[in-house]
Length: 104
Image (cartoon, rainbow, N blue to C red; front, side, top):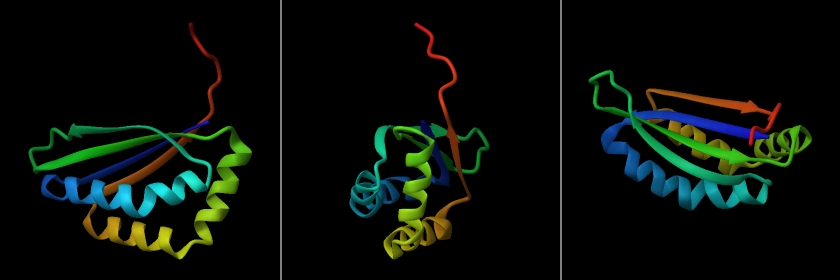
């Protein structure tokens, strides 16, 4: 199972947000069973000085996804991190998908 978090931020906030993500969010996410696969940065092309950060995670399957969500909902540190993010972000989206077919 793959989870993609996409956060669009003003460019000047991207570095500080990543620092806080690494320090405040990542350790707990790992404890909740999320394995980070990569962090991507892309210009949004809107000319507004924003960048999109996309974090790719994996989980063992859909049951692990729902267990992770329940654990996150019970953790006030998770809520505090996303409240901080929402104060900065232009937009934020999370998508979860399950691999249907692996191509070699």
